[in-house]
Image 1 (tube, rainbow, N blue to C red):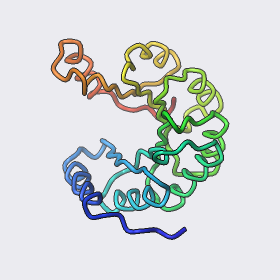
Image 2: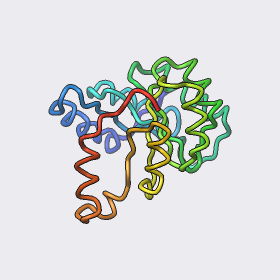
Image 3: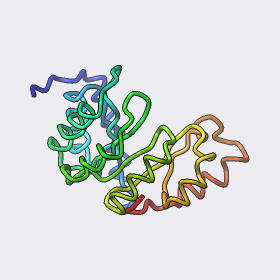
Length: 189
């Protein structure tokens, strides 16, 4: 697949990856974003690798709705192009089925995580049951707090909540923010 050049304005974001990667504790993984179309996601992922990131959060193809085979081809192409760990983000136009995630885990050694952005506890349960600790599973929703208990019961120890973006200085987020910052991701779901 030919790789086109990404505009310099978009590539400038990688200077933001270099700074935290150089200053963060060794045990704090730095995940950089990669997304848009497959070719652009590969360029972003390669730039993240050069910048010193530990992995990427792979967003779905932009402005399209893909079936499971198309999503799998997108992930496989990015995983083949880099040696970094890859976390796939299941959300909106790219909801990964448990069977697709399991197949990708079998074929992509550097697939290290699954991020649920739709609140599908059933799919998370199926992934955990099938893959055990093969992937780190992350829950993320604007209302992730309402899903915290089911996620914890499932064994998910890491979630990302957008409430910090909506209410960064709220008394409701001060305790969770410090607890969230101290949470260490587990290897399993």
